[in-house]
Length: 505
Image 1 (cartoon, one colour):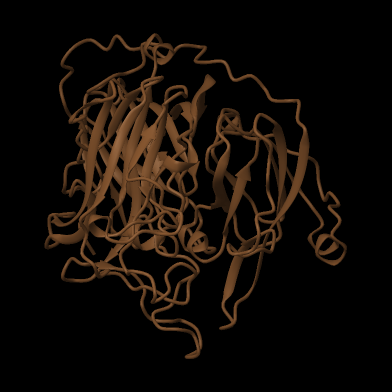
Image 2 (image 1 turned 30 degrees about the vertical axis):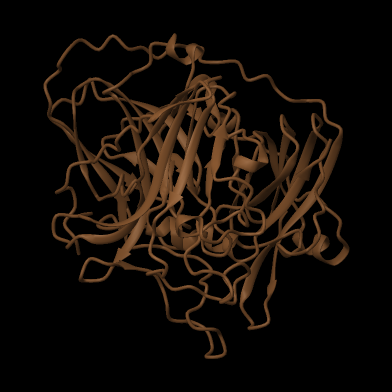
């Protein structure tokens, strides 16, 4: 087992524009293969990174300042992770290595959204059927928030992100700046991911079926849980901090793993924001649950912790088992060992932002999260019992607001993400699963439960729990076009738990 807390936390570089194009900042980002040391005792590991860095560099952009980004693929033509060519989009007729970048949580025109079939290969030699342009434009007309960018290529998203193609994208605005929150260098993004390694330091991803021999080789797996936790690309790192307040912008960037984070000395998180920006008021939380793709903006006050070593723990029960404190039950360590360089003049205001509650809507949709067998006898997870290739069925109108009832008849919690839009969680309610499956009727099996206090902001990813109806309300806009919604467990997303939807005028 790799020794914990021997490597310092890495802080991702900030990317800067190369020039102005049409009076807008212009960036170039190149996807490259590199070897990176992820732990003191591991040989350098082959990874794919944006600008050759895993995780990729962090964007810091201003609200209402559009930017152009040219994403370039200079990756090898052959993948180093196992591809199941029976998965839609990953057929042998398609190039092995395809990429397309999605700004997760970004409010963007569909031509810059990173549609899964808008992929492109090395040097743009080949492109998918929905590829329209090389350069993306991000309008950034949204409040201050923590977004992230990652690969979204059809059928191999799980592999490309696992290889390292992910990074943070932070939107700043004047409203947030006036709040006097902890700022750089006390404002730190934390990307939490799990990985497994071979003894030679290379990444392990399953390539052997755990099903009958009739299953294709290598198989798509229903989920993936690594046995090692990385933060900002380092295995179980430590971070030397001063006895003062710090702001941490936390992202669960794992393929499948959920986390329930807490600090070993009992210090709470003061959550100030969620996926799509600031909450109305700070919420004190002793522990923090994050599904894949969810973000939490938190403040931790180390001012009374001088001399302590504090472990960020994970207590989320996975597949019926508590995590081992020696492995996946530990995330990173904070060492309150640095002297105070200057007085801490930051504050945690009582009021952060306004989050007007959505109440008026034009339509309600009821959509199942379900499963069935594929032609090989494997379980596949579906949205409303439809495959990716089935005709589009969700066509919300531009400017209208809808409620979606997500009826989860599976045994798993699914983090459901919609591109383009932000939403609010109305409530969750248990239902009679057998009655629904037999008759299609939703019969309540308990009261409606409001979302947790720290979920009552703007969201773009929601935990839809097993045996519950999760109700979300969202306005569709400001752009028409072709987008997707999907489960953000990457193994589910890659194998059919993703659907296109169209915002129509």
